[in-house]
Amino acid sequence: MLLFSIAAVVIGLLLPGAPKPEPPRHLPWQIKVLPSGSSRVFGVTLGETTLGQMEAQIKKEAEVSLFAADKGRKVVEAYFHNVMLDGLKAKLVATLGFDKEQLQAIFDRGARIATLAQGKRKVTLSDPDLALARNTPVVAITYLPAIDLDEQTVQRRFGPPAEKIPEKAGKVVHWLYPDKGLDIAIGKESKEVLQYVPPGEFGRLVEPLR
Image (cartoon, rainbow, N blue to C red; front, side, top):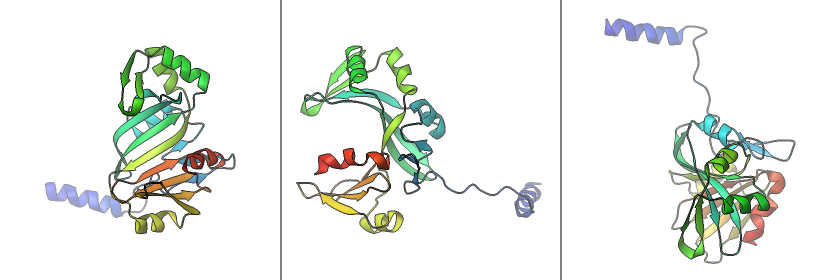
């Protein structure tokens, strides 16, 4: 009976009209540049797709926190731990599109503040601000792959970069793809980090490197 059932399934797959497996759509090199100057990656349109929509898209709930540095810079980030996208395991960090006034208000309303290394602080959002975060657009994504993306793999999948900028210590080199809104940090002693922003806003990603 079991052999008959297996044979029936195989025959069904071979018959005309049998459903075909969907092609991969959420691989890190599948970036769609939009006429608006934004881009879409992992099913997320930067500057448009909200965090809640992104969570529904990848079927994972994020840990949302505000990070503050001593110099005053604040950012709300949503961390996705161990995401599987089209067979590739990775971690994702989504940056949310709050302005300075909103970030200060979220900081002031924080439910809890923890001190991290180098003077940074991690703020747990209040429940109303957490709901607000899930209705706020994702403006940038950081992708941390579990697999090793060496230079040959990066060149084959993403093509040659427009520019390479080494960090001061010399252990990390940033491969820049302004037309894709992509910065790939390739380290000799660390894992690769891919940062995605709308191509029209690529300057703000490169400015700190210069």
